[in-house]
Image 1: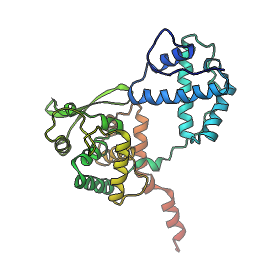
Image 2: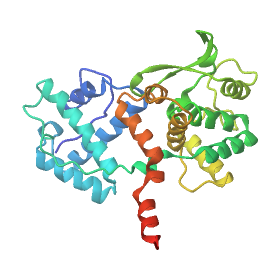
Image 3: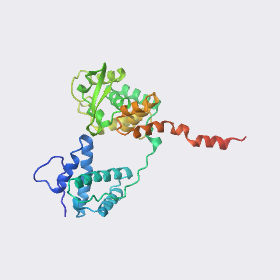
Image 4: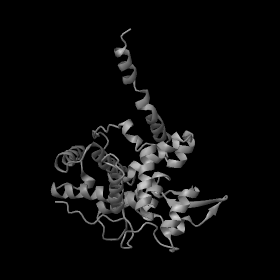
Length: 304
């Protein structure tokens, strides 16, 4: 039976073939993405161990059984299952390129269908986002900075929690800027409008270094803490249930388009590698207003 060892992105002479293959795959990723992929690989490696399968000897049928395990035993939805299988695609693609396997077992695996609800990607509307900002400002300077980083700059929650005070002390081309390390280890420089800069400076207070967002007891704020704060602030602001940090990023992108930003400028703002992702947000803005249901209802109600 295969016994999985630790999956860590560091090479040593005692690693198994599977661990070396995992390390080779993970070498292309950093930060939260790498941590997520390590977790996904660990789930697969542990499943292989229980079922007596060597990951580098797995066949398509094994992957199909693993997919059913994700759905029926772990209770993963289509999106989570799709992502975990996609990680395996990458793992086996690298293993094949490195001649560790002859053919990837993922080639003909049936991927779950993930349905994208375009109308759900809009996030908060202008009045709701304003209400959340007002509630956060009234609560604390930290809450205000947290909401502003995501709701006005479009940062992801991991990016917001990683902001250091030193990251927004520089000036470039006449603008105070924030430097962040984005998804996939891509650096970004973001100009800070005066209301945003003021909120970040108020949050920093007398501190001149260290993580900007801290908890009430002075420890660095993490993703879970940020999630709880956003959920609590949303409840206090009277917003619909289900608010989470990424909702604010959605809201920021949609609001940027509503404010007159071009698709190209919105893509730069959102830091989308694929412009088609930004187009989704643009199309979503008018979906409900232009929906054929309005015209049909008026047509059927017309007594003339």
